[in-house]
Image (cartoon, rainbow, N blue to C red; front, side):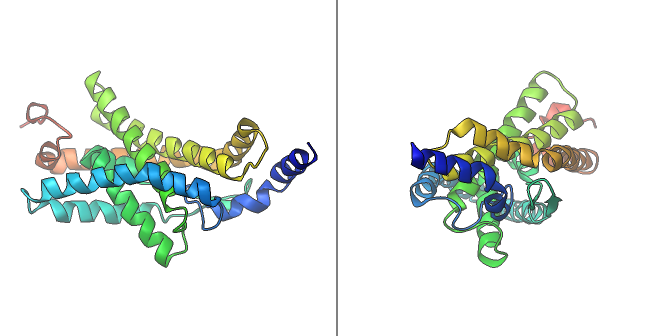
Length: 249
């Protein structure tokens, strides 16, 4: 009982000293215990393998596909390197970019792109960590990409405007990533403390920044999709974002 009380006091009163190293969407080196870090690697690995298989399959029949994937990888890398201060948490947050890649290339390739971006950032920018790479892939790559893709597809099925569909995809991909990161952090650092109070505490710390960041990411996603729709609708058809009959001649 005494040990549980001590852990609870540490968690709730010294959390601001721990979370600054998490960088919101990117969980830094050493934050997660080994067992949790290993678990998230195991969960993320099949999704990364799915992305690799999908990439090899498409690029083997379409040589122009590799440069397109490289371009979107650069977009995700740059967007997810844009830090925004979060005074309430004493750290920084940032947009993700996976909403854009998920809408344009699908969730499998978006996961692969996010994994590559996260690895480079961990190796060369100290943004995230190698031991927490699996957890970061899970939140930003897997959950963010799948959420953005499903939201976009659902809204298109119910005949929603393409710009609104893309906006909501970017918005929800960002917020889903942020909530997943909060859950991963709470599970990893809670010790014997209850999960939900810590999860809500971490989530609330980032709300002032992540709410507008989600809107910003929605606007960026919609802007890129609408630009392609106006200038190169053939690319959207090629990437199966639109059906041929949806393109006005």
